[in-house]
Image (cartoon, rainbow, N blue to C red):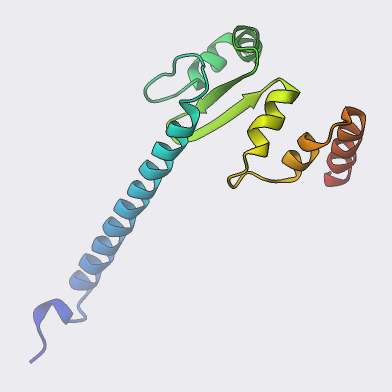
Length: 138
């Protein structure tokens, strides 16, 4: 005799599917929260404007229109500041080239084309290489 939870009826199949979806959703939530925790820990080292508990800086940018608020933050925090769009998407805006060299030289997963260009000492070659990459990307 086959146990009732292993039967192939439509209701038990739906129950198994909903249970699987629930478990996968829970695992994704845990993954997002752990990612948010590591991102917040990395961003805590940089001073920045206060964030909304749910929307981050998205509401302030939307209310003031365009990116005028980000420009004012650039004057308020001269080297870099974190920028949050919601709870799980965070960016680090770096304005000072020497500060960018220091941040990118530490490594840690964000070594990319941008960090390679930031490490070059000649800014004219940096802008030329960036222009070439952007031009050929389109």
